[in-house]
Image (cartoon, rainbow, N blue to C red; front, side):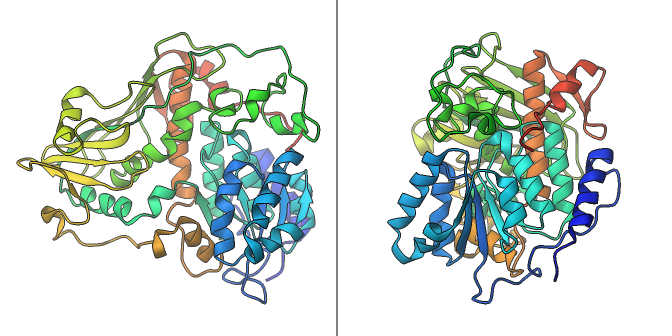
Length: 467
């Protein structure tokens, strides 16, 4: 299978900019090698778009699968050095990293490295859609870390583009690869808990109270292209603390959307999938202090969903902050099993009982009316008759599922078509937060009903210099 010609791709980009994804029939974009094929040695050629902490955490699972790292890219030379140093420790498995072509500009990598089959995008929330989009348009399979998008419009765009390709996409919500996550979906959809009208997801992480951007710049480290690092976001005065990973830059709304985007990508995953939620009608949030330029010290988001098929209307909550947790009366249901309410989790409240998992959707347990304690979703007596309807990931290995999908052996469970509406859901929460009032969400129009002033928050302005 040959690459699409450069002319075709250029015209595709032109149409994309003029009409927007979904306004016209997208062509099928094929990978650089035929779908289901790897190199002559059976290995995929993979590029890492970013060499930061998350890429370094993902790298071992790629090398363990025997794939080849063909190219790496980062705007911070120090990160490239750290990744190479860690790869050396893996001996022969990490040898390809030492030989990999090195780039500062992801666009030049995608243009030059024709043999690359797939990319891993882990460059920070503001970069996830631009880099994923460019990679898909270049015919590459894409694994993108969460959070998938930095706005509702971005989430919609990358979801539609992902659906229009025959490329393997996967979002970095690893909990979804576990047997307990998928079994939780099955027992909920089988009605084991009865009608569910309330779900709470939470984690007790907290930031300092919302603060303004510091306009006093620190010296920019040698080897860091700060302008490129900011990328689609505004060019802010450099502060050393922005470089501390997703819990550092992710606090600042210019670059990320705090705990909701970071952990909410995990916490909202199981509710959205198990309850077939679709789009919310109403979105609201309460915070304990005035919102400035950073995520607040605590949040309580609420999304209201209409009835769907066999599912009744339901309210889904996300809580973060030092005291985050479910309402006390629901938390009490966990005490006989855990002695205290866990510091993170997802809790489904049904008429027949509850289902609780950690915030990643993993390790689900059920407590039905009359049960003394919770029992695992894999062995609760009431679930024995519930059939297995979902595929299981080989070895419960999230990365391997994507790598196998790149080779045409399977399909991913959490591709962009699934991940994008969950990301969009979180970003509607950020719109409500930044407006400071509840909103009525019109998903079909990608708008807040009756509030045109919300449009710039739904479609965040981006700098085009590095795109």
